[in-house]
Amino acid sequence: MDSSSIELPGSEIAAITLQGGELRIHFSRAYIIKTMTGSVERTRWWQAGDLVLEDAEVWGELPQGPLVCGGGDVSENIYTYRDMIPIPLQSRGRARCLLRFRDSDRILRAEGRGVRLELDAVAKYIEHLRPN
Image 1: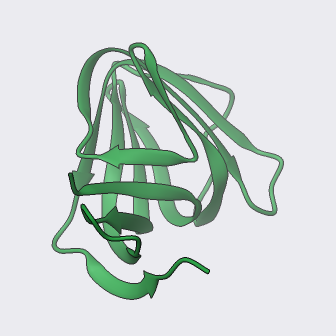
Image 2: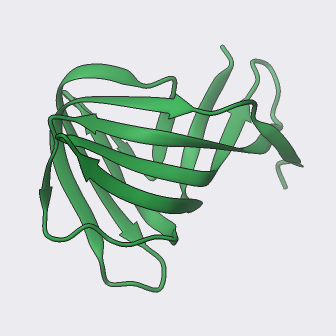
């Protein structure tokens, strides 16, 4: 099975907004790792897009962009994704997000009633990742 996921550490965030209960984390450059069935090699790509929490409640102030993600957790129902976001992602129910940022002590902590990933345009190839 082929799989793709956003690698949170290093992904670039342009803005974080909360409007009408919708928390939107806009990635100007989300780094994507693609794995192909039967191959030991992986590939790295980048793509812009948004991680959206519906009916969101945020603890503390929203961090101001631009930011570089240092890692964190995205959860939906019983699943927690550490330092990554699976592609595709769309889920109803309990959703949580806790992100850390490089060169900052700010943390984004939010919960909502649904989560989805909206990617823009087409992913752009960066490189092959070969095992040592």
